Amino acid sequence: MQTETLDSNAPAPSDKNSIAALAKMGEVWKDRAEVKNEEPEVDMMYSAEYDDFLDKLIPFHQHPRYAELNDDMRTKILSSGWIAYNEKTIDIESKIISPVCNEIIYGTLPGTRNETIRWLAAETLVDEAYHVLMVINTTRATRMQRGLMDLRLPSFELVNQIDLEAAKYSENWQKKIVRLVACICSEVFISDYLSLLSDAGDGVQPINQITTDAHRKDELAHAGIFRHLTKEIVQHLTPRELVFFAQMLPRPMRWFASQELNVWETILHELGYEHAKEVIGDIRAEAEVALFRVDFSELIDLAQETGLLDTPEGRDSFQAEGLIN
Ligand SMILES: [Fe+2]
Ligand SMILES: [Fe+2]
Image 1: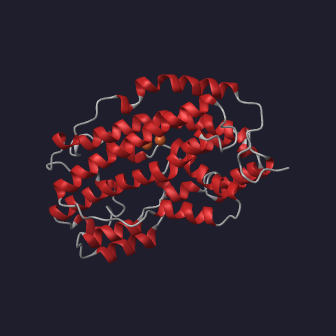
Image 2 (image 1 turned 60 degrees about the horizontal axis):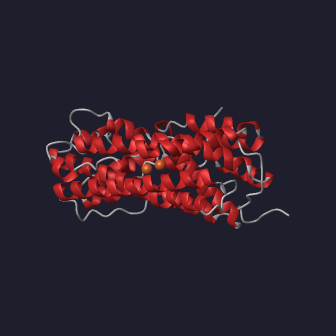
Image 3 (image 1 turned 30 degrees about the vertical axis):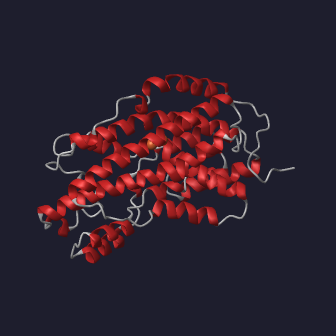
């Protein structure tokens, strides 16, 4: 009988290479994890002389109104962009990645009742919890220094979309796969934000670059971990689950590419920016989603390595999302 709960851990041929690679990654964690390093002194290093963020990461930086901003408003917009980016990071860690790590620890995802896999999930959970702490420290400093303690943001489009998609399906195993693929997408592609910021050089708040670089290093390791985890999970899916997984896998890329214009609209209103409506309206008319800004090559590689692109459902879904021709 087919399982409805998506916790099939029936023996399927484990990929020995994946388990061996994961075991190695588990071993090096104690040396590479940022949580094992000294914590950056955010409050001591923060200097209001620097911008907190890059102009090019603001979705309306090419709008003619942006060039007209006075220094004070531009600085506040950049700082709010940094805060929003970090608040979104908290959501990704807490609402997207950690729940999947917990599923793995409990062995409630196919193929995860394996001590090496549980070990890796537990280490990753610690990494992500540490990233939440780093991000809270850095945004607290920014909020205090820039007078933005009261800036409150609405929920992110990314999280809304995952919830909406999960709600479309009646079966628990389908909802789990929606959340699983969102986690996989997040972990296998390294947001260009992280490297753009950590390599920004002069002009951008050094402590923000240090924090982002620390995060980026951990995420490079996570990308490898989730590639191997995905291979393992895919091998243990039932045929019906595999079809659904192939249909869902590319979908989150569009959610990750959201320009989060609702969040930006709120920010600009809260900052008292007089042209908020005009600027956001213009950008909304252009593109709510900036798929061109996301590098999804890693996801395509993964779909290839797992054989999903050899299935009609996998090919169709990647085509439909515009990730392959
Ligand atoms: Fe993280
Ligand atoms: Fe991660």
